[in-house]
Image (cartoon, rainbow, N blue to C red):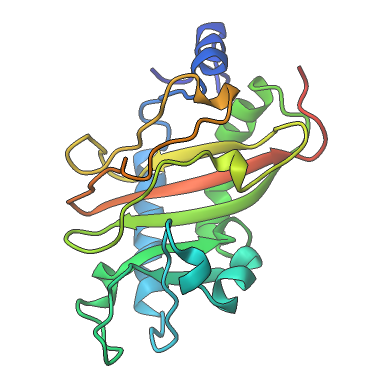
Length: 224
């Protein structure tokens, strides 16, 4: 299901409101996808990994340092859990050890900024009822083979809280994503309540996979 004329259809809007998610196939143009992947290769090649920070969806408070907290307005690199040996050396090449890059690609990198501020995204958000949408976070996430920790189920509004709730996340697969190589999972209707989930529930992502996440909030209140 795609977008006609840059805006969501009444059927798409109804599904999104009821289920809390919407799959839009081939949202990004092939040249846009390739440009972002090529640009990330360039950023990784130029990254000095002597300064390391590890990202964990379970133990970030224990593992993090100021590098994480200061990354809101920067382009910062975060390694997978267990990427390093006990003596501080990478077990694999840095390209296969990175967990994510964030959180301000949309501000500081021209390739990602161009995509995040495209008319296609703007029109889609207007059709969702946003009056003045503001991008607050962007991440390029890697799903590496044979390394990394589990991604525990979560609701993004728990971390990016506004009153009233106004956060919308855009998850863009930069290569074909399936249940085999690590697609996104969603619980239909879970956006309408806070759902406690067992800590034992998690998804194994065995093969390398790339995707871009853009988190957007309304500058003021969403138009209803």
